[in-house]
Length: 266
Image (cartoon, rainbow, N blue to C red; front, side, top):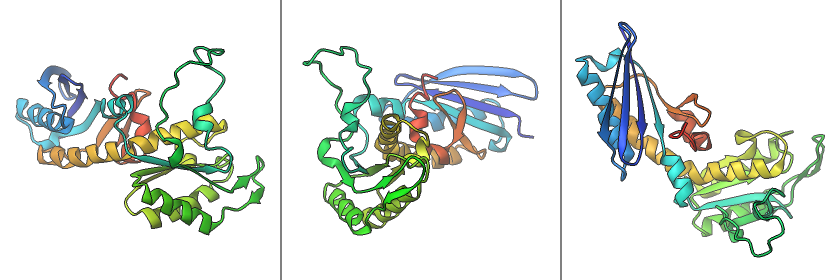
């Protein structure tokens, strides 16, 4: 009978493990040394040790979840993917402009944080969908394809797509994503209607860019961790803690890594 629930929190120094035996209500906690070069090694070892401590088989594990700072560290340290952006003509500087909320509103010399996508990798295409869903300008496939090839020549690993009113109708973003997939092969493609389908273009744009920036990092991490957990005897579908304290599957986290930015701290 599957009665063991394992929770693991991976930090830079220690990996904390909590095991709950639901059948008898016993909770056990302990620490392992983390493996910063590849956190998945310590995570898998913690799972293996958890099962071994109870002399149980992997089939006895009904849930495996863990919090990780992989996305957090990649974002803070700027070690995400080489990312590009495709957006409406006239709006590529939105990533720099942001909102009026600034620490020093009238300081002309204030330092700005470095954008995750530099200006030369932010490309514009002529597209306009009105607030009511009326199509004023359909994206031109040839123009989109030219932009995709330009990004390919820049060796991008991920691309964010954000149009002003895609939350009303995502058809144009889907079209661009399809062409990017054809031209960029294995690049991580993410569109704003998938990430944050709501109004306020700056918030949606910046969130989508973060998702693209973290995509290859999180996908690579989870692709290493998944077989290691399987080798450790864990057959239950593994989960990752979200920033809101809930959990999502590895499959979802691979597509929406922005949800795990505060996975460890949460």
